[in-house]
Length: 413
Image 1 (cartoon, one colour):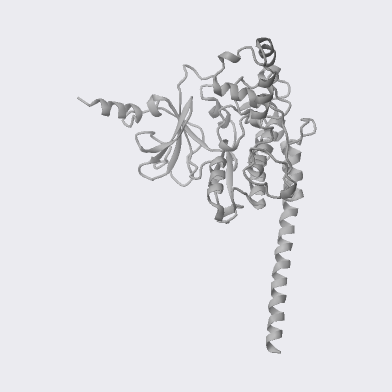
Image 2 (cartoon, rainbow, N blue to C red; image 1 turned 60 degrees about the vertical axis):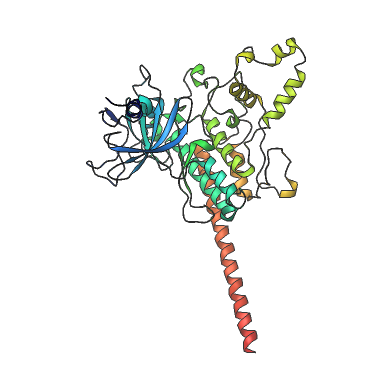
């Protein structure tokens, strides 16, 4: 009779049971159909380690036993019936063609994940996400400075994120046969450092050849201008309000394409300054609490269900209520505004980069660039930046050559 330990292990890693697979995208192209690492999960795979744990899901690293191919497996709580027969993020991703800056989802297995949960097989990202890379930058000053991303690296990340967003919103960059005029807009709705995965750091020491992808489409949704207003709203207490634009409030949580654009700008803002384009929520909290002198004031200033809200929900509320504020990234260190969240000065990036970033972070949504407009502007300004960098490098080489020639002439005399 098997021990309780063996029974538990069998439940956590059910290697000897067959599970029906729903293929989302073809498996990795380097394998044929007989050795495809997305087949026969989990009995053809080996569990390696846990990657992260959330309230609704866990993500673990598994390897295909015969090929060694790594997979990120997301185990989610099973539902009696998914709205579209698949979890929401797979419903979204399965409708999209492949794009270089969008995570690849390989397959879905019912009840094959940890603890009998449903399992989604994704491509694995060895380097984690931008949140992890920022921590790495802070701990490895020899690489890119103390938490400072080079301008080349920032341009690379910005270019890729906007490319992915223009694809999601407008179908730009979709393969031949996809008509952009009939494209169904997809909103990510939870863009933040933790949801931007790093495929490669690249060989360049300043990380300028980094490769990134949007991931975690759990809150993503199809969107159209004519859909019902209530269907445009973010569910309460979901999402990351630190990256919401000014037009989204506690009372009005309608989320449109311009909110995704703001969030991408917010990611670059956080990489530059160390915090998103928002006033410190702790300041808002202190100001509001200073006015809550009695029960009448608290009822007026706080939500009706404040006492029922847990700590996380209260923090979510303060982030929603806090005003948005954008700090430019082309300001000299001595002129930068002080902020308690700032751990180090923001590098002084070029005016071209700052202009593109400010297009994404316009406070008025009517003035904010669309993803397609921003992509065109970034392509233009990034090309000009690269040309200027090349000219500067050529000038430096000519100066070095001239100095060497002058030195040789002096020696011959």
